Length: 560
Image 1 (cartoon, rainbow, N blue to C red):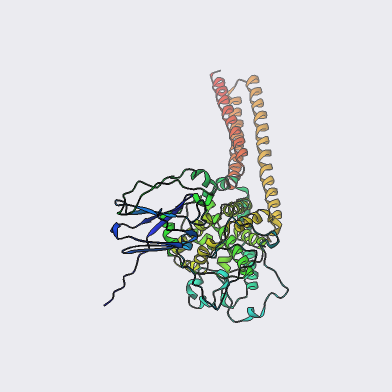
Image 2: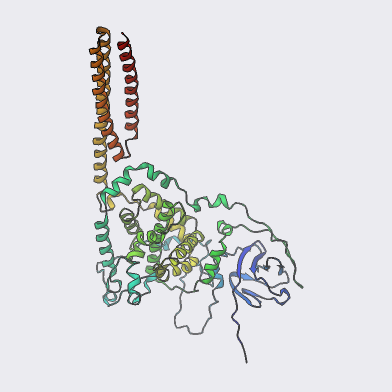
């Protein structure tokens, strides 16, 4: 009988210097003298029962006698130095574990489907784009999909319409009708055209917009201040990751293997990036799918990615990077891609739809907050695909814990986690520049925001004016009453004058008390009048001092 044992894929990480790839493999409780290592051009294989690891590198390695390894018995960690074929060559995308684990493509004499690279492309044999490649300026990537007058083509008129990553899914909602009704806002996605999805989404946003909620957040500067001042983690990345371990650790040596320390190479910022152990595990669990997309579908995928990451950046900023139980709802709700399966045609469409949903659904509905989130997303794309992949893995983890939104991982997020690893940082940086250059204003959102803000300012002035005038009237009344009391004290010394003084004082403070309560009610109704409240308190202190003076006068008159 022959028994097949399932091999385990060990956790690993990869670094490099001028001469070697430094591979660290965690394989505890194994016999180091039973390790088998295979090195040949782009391929590397590692086997020790029950672990098996096969990696495909973007550049060539060689077995030339300089390869060496060591094993830390206590930690259960192998460190293997793999020689580069060309000394000093930089290997890109070593942090993209899913790409490294992908199987090498088998070449056939007559492939049924062949992906042809154009003469201007610089893709390597693994289908990756080298970040050092310079795009041809005559073939610049456009961030808009060409539009035609006929919005519904013949393919759109079929019974089932596609959606999800690259528009490759259809009929999914017939199997998950109950679950998906709690995840997306679209009632019949399999029977709704892409143009109708956008139209219905706009109608729903217009119906949901709450003018009073927007005004409240517009005027409440204290509430918005900490949210606007928050700094996402990727903005501080360079400062927090400026120092790294420069030599391989001191490990025990298995028989026949040689340990050697070597200095690490920091060719660019991506070399310094390190995923957490949980993130590495997620990357190793991803399906190694190939995504063959047309240029139009690729543009659509990038635009939808911007939309999804905008909603993620909103949640990061409003929770100050401490996700809550509402984070899954927030991310899916603010993204029209996830909530309406909307297909965007341009970058401006993405920003306008996101602005509309930011002002209609979440707890904080503020234009300045929306502008900050746009800036966060731009900086995220400027930091490259490693940071984007980290955010996508975080979204995947959040959705996976949700009762129903885990289905969005199947529709979008899992594919994005694999697809983004193959994209060029040059193209991603170009997208960041386009986000920065795409300007939208309040008039682009169909909610008459400028008129609403003018109305809010008018109401603010109407509240503030009576408050100031009332304080002035009370102050003048106080002065006139005090002067009247002083004249009475000097002209008369009998008990009737004392009674008059007390009656006058009682009326005066009764009026002050009424005015005070009215003004405090106004202040409590709107938190924007702190300065007026302070003036009112000062006025009250003046009256308290006047009351003390009157009591002294009354006591003196009685003694007389």
